[in-house]
Length: 85
Image 1 (cartoon, rainbow, N blue to C red):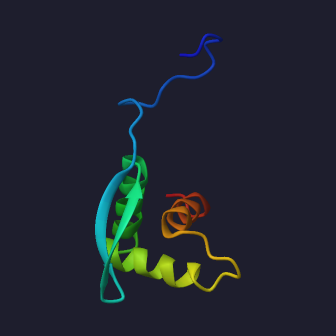
Image 2: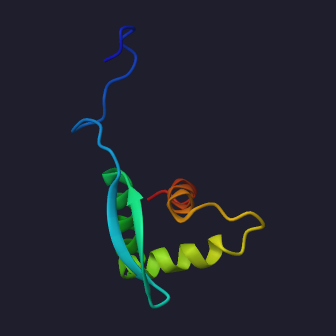
Image 3: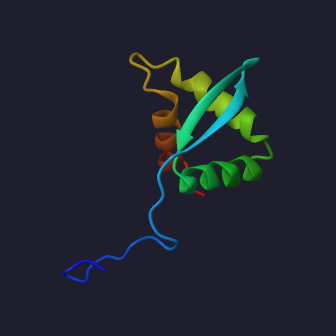
C-alpha cells in the first residue's frame, strides 16, 4: 500500500514489457507489452476463437486506417481497454 494506504501493488508485483514475435500479414514483427496485456490479449483471442496472431493482425489492420496511426503496442493496449472481457 502507499503511504496513504489507498492503493496496493498489483498481485504478483510490477513487471516490465516482454517482447514477442508475431507473424502479421506474412511477416514477423516484434511487440513489447507488459505480461498483463499479453494475458488479456490471449484471453480475448480465446473468447473470439481466434489465434493470437489473427487478433493482433485484425487490430493492426484497423490501426493503420487511422489518420495518425499509433504504434502497434499502443493500439493493442487501447483496443484492450475499449473491449474489456
